[in-house]
Image (cartoon, rainbow over all chains, first blue to last red; front, side, top):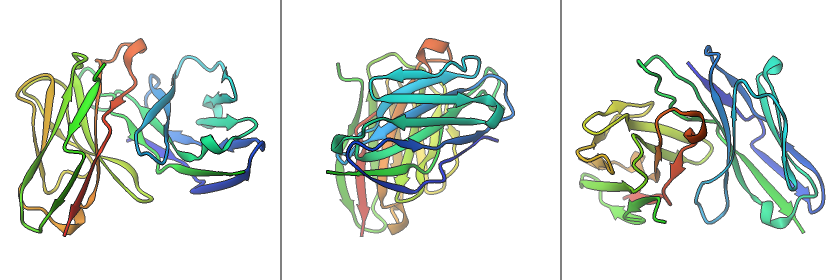
Length: 119
Length: 115
């Protein structure tokens, strides 16, 4: 069974603050993938990043950075110098082979963290 | 670039009515999924399909049926709608398991209200 925990239900910050969104996952497989998605108030789901289990290198994309640590089963997301446009619900997701022949890799989502950035 | 398209975007049903949500993708993806999103619950998998003609149950399948008669379409049916099925429904598709194509692409969502 796989599980994704996003313990922070809601985070409120003031613009220009740094903020980290936590994601902890559980899986029995050695090959798996992790994702972050953003859901702005308009409701669509926007893909942000994918990581596979063999690549623990951290990634930076502009103001966004991701810290993947297999030792703690965490894949945390940091926004530096937050902006009002960052206000959204952020979802962490995990997909692994599961028990289906050939691997189902069904994405399982955490419950999301609502980020509110105040001007 | 259409990607994943869901029809309709909004719908209000009366309890007991039936309806079908259509998901169409033009990316030749093998895998397709139906999720529902409820406040504080994240996205929960209803049913999924690993290819044309195949379907399987997800985490919350009760009250829903699906069909995948064509590779590009994945239909979600509600035979007798209940207020508990009020939710936002998302369809997603994904190319089969190679590293560079494992993220899911989502439709824009369907907001369904059952009164």
